[in-house]
Amino acid sequence: MSNSFVTHALPSTAGPETRAVDAGLLIDPTTGAIAPNISMSVNNALMPGDGAFSADGVEDLAALPYLYARWTNPTVRQLEQRLAALEGGEDALASATGMAAIAGMMLTLLKAGDHLIVSDVCYAGAAELTQRVLPEFGVEVTAVNMARLDLVEAAIRPNTRLIHCESPVNPILRVIDLAALSALARRNGLLVSVDSTFATPVATRPLSLGVDLVIHSLTKFINGHGDALGGAVIGRRELVAQIRGRAGVYLGATLSAHSAWLIMRGIDTLYPRMRMASDTAMAVAGFLESHPQVERVLYPGLSSHPQHDLAKRQMDIFGGMIGFRTRDPKATASRLAERLRVVHYAFSLGHQRSLVVLLDTDEMMASTYRLTGESLADYRAYAGDGLFRLSIGLETPDDIIGDLDQALTH
Ligand SMILES: Cc1ncc(COP(=O)(O)O)c(C=O)c1O
Image 1 (spheres, rainbow, N blue to C red):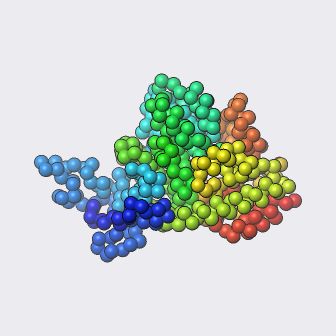
Image 2 (cartoon, helix red, strand yellow):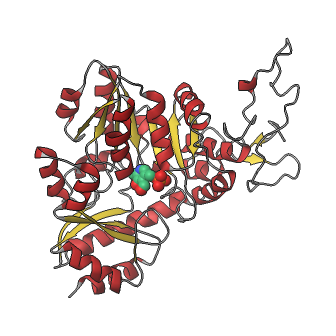
Image 3 (tube, rainbow, N blue to C red):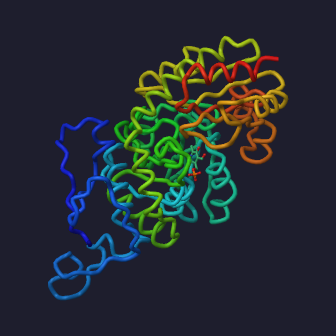
């Protein structure tokens, strides 16, 4: 079972829902099984004729993808091909977690003396990696509000190599103009990576907007069932190969075949899940906006969202993530944790079950962002003293609304 799988050849006109179900699907040559088998083997036999041996008899190891599972493995490779097809990328690397994808990409593309421009607000792990770890390796880092392209441009230095952002931004749901950011990067010879975990390819395909690399935490909406960790980097073949060579081979951040199999099963239903979560999120956001205990709601689909017009241009659906604020957020948090019966009071997001958690602003500043001046004022304009991050699941919409209503109402 080395390289002799048959790829299920989709018509080139296949739509996104078809690609989510079928792209990269390999029919097992022994049994004809359609559902992907899990190939747990760590290594695969090197066979003459497989491309493992060149004409002069010297092994060409790079020609054999299933040499050793730290590079990739047949099940992981099926997932990688499906992800590349969904994002319209040439290739994808699947990694053990979303953080492994971010760290692997940054530790490959950045070296001592390089400069990174990163979104001043982004997933806490990414923010802490760029503030605490990269500087220890001699990488210079500037954090800026990526909704302000003038600030991004002003931050560019001769040694700037990479711009990294998210859209929508975790947790404040700021939407970034990816086409404009990519154009600015291209004019200055820089690479752009975007963590598109909140959007998923159902909402936005950043590569089609000029972005170089798309990152996902597969742990979230793409797997969608809260039972596997995973990450991915998707983009041009040579960039992905470079990241695989370091993140997989030297940093060992490879995804397990079992997790890849679970995540592929999750992707089979990505489109209907995301559409339902997005429709429900729109209804829940509207309900929250009218609730007397709620001070502000952040959802890209609401006309009150600061970048609603951009979101309408850049997102096909508005996604399953909502932020909202109440007076006295800590008291609200304990009421939610005690009273919620449908929604779970817990960290993480993008699962089939709705999840909500308070991100207290002072605690986030002490632990993670350390924003000052205009950046801090802007964060507070979104998040106030604390933001409830609500991830919409697949429950009956009225059950989510009723549950939030009874838990929020005094
Ligand atoms: C936007 C975003 N990126 C990356 C990550 C990290 O993903 P993982 O937990 O799979 O490492 C998260 C986790 O919450 C996230 O929300």
